[in-house]
Amino acid sequence: MSDNKKMTIIATKGTFDWAFPPFIIASTGVAMDKEVTIFFTFYGLNLLLKDTSKLRVSPLGNSGMPMKLPFGPEWLQKIDFGPKIPNIFWSLPFTEYLATFLMKKTMKKNGVATLDELRSMCQEFDVKFIACEMTVALFGYSKDDFIDGVEFAGAATYFEECDGSNHNLYM
Amino acid sequence: MADETLDASGLNCPLPILKTKKALSKMDTGKILEVISTDAGSIKDVEAFCNQTGNKLISTVEESGKYIFTIEKA
Image (cartoon, rainbow over all chains, first blue to last red; front, top):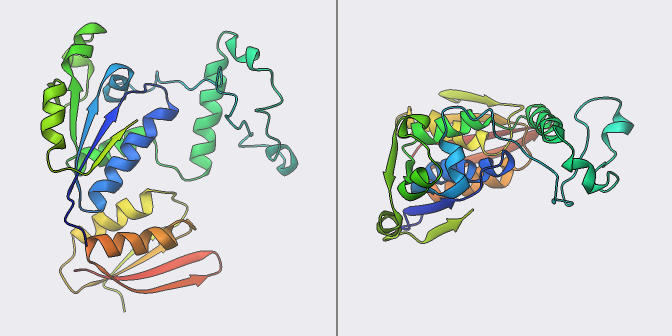
């Protein structure tokens, strides 16, 4: 057993795929008896919005992203279209809807928790959610745009949360 | 014989661990929880979870693609 009981995460990404790691690590951290705080700043604020259905993933500029179909005959599901489709294709309108749809389907098929499920699990486990006040104002959000239970504070508060924590992750 | 059983079949990381944590938190010390998982990653993860939280992993059994963990609540 460990005496290192605290963990903090800075969540900075606002795309559908990058919404998962902070919530997965935070909820697991609590399961491992850590006291966890997530500081959401810049695009990471998207992860606290009441409506997360607008979050998208795009393969544009991410040539490392595997693109396999979650349905169809087995031989077809094995093909990785990632390296086969020219990356410029993903600059066409609405292609991110297709990529997001396929990623959601694949996750469901693999028994991966949904974003809202992971986020409510974090809240149930008392993970502290802090939204960066400066970026909330900068991006013109209103506090009503976010889910209940979010604290609004700045970088100094993040540092206070780091006190006594030896897991401090930037995502 | 287990006091409680948690069927986490079909669920992927980190859900088996999160559900195990929730199930254990509702149980009394010394009670036995049996967790059934199909996530191959849970073999190492349940062990790490028990090491870290002080709960005792009594046994791990693999049976036709299912992993059955017996955990004693600390």
